[in-house]
Picture: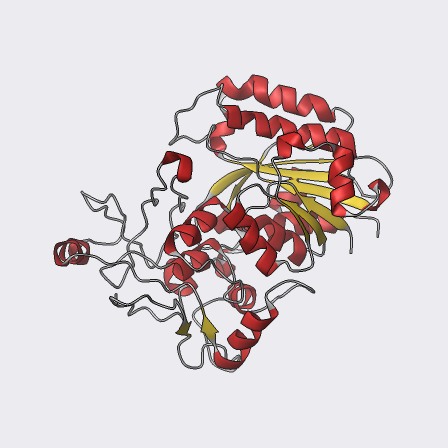
Length: 381
């Protein structure tokens, strides 16, 4: 399989989509300890590099990854987006914006056959033009596609999460030419698109808070994994949340429990007061609670973009979470994972905060798979 390095791996959403497209995730770079631990659990055969990427040179990335330059086919990554986000301060001089440029500096040093960088729509604002130009100046020898705006729902995920993908390739005889049309052609037909109600099929929904620590484990509803039973989900989505496990990916023990007992993790309940539950119960689909600012999910629509919340340096505040369409509570991490397009066999962190933060920071694996599949089809293998 062609080797790819993920430079901002997080919990592995972009990595998973890339692996499903046919690539080998040779190495993953991630500075945050909890995120890289999630990646390590779900990608046990990947080399994990917990380093500040600003301290790494191209040669050091290769040395740590254990491969030669000619063995590297692609580099992927989602540089931190907080500096560009519409809900942030929008500071052009935010030091995190430098990481976007660093990504392209490493492309220049390593010269992979292709690269894929992902970021929030805010990065396309005119005030960030200098940053974009400085970054793209490092890859002037690449064919660079116009920025691709990807709404995850159009590619089969049950969320309207919208991101820009920056894609380039070398004319080195290892990949055929392609355009933005090859990417947008990977959008799925309306009949394969997945609503909130469809996405959450099979997950137990009557989640009750208990005073004792919850294990976070729940059994899927009866017969959900029985392929002979008719599902409200499309086959496209069902296959991606129950199977399609790339070779060497996944925690073997967890997957075995999932397959044999239909048990998954991530069902950590959130304690709501009686007054909060009463307010939530009165909300209609799409309405926002006036105090918490949580929006009640529309079962026949798509999930709004899930947020990550703040890091420890900003007080570790949880992001506002959507309210379940059928119950007066916010969604669980496992429900958030489904709505982002993560499969049930993908093991989530053991806490609510880390689970939601990692999911909120991630690329939808389904959207990533579609984009990277378009690239894989152009490789001269």
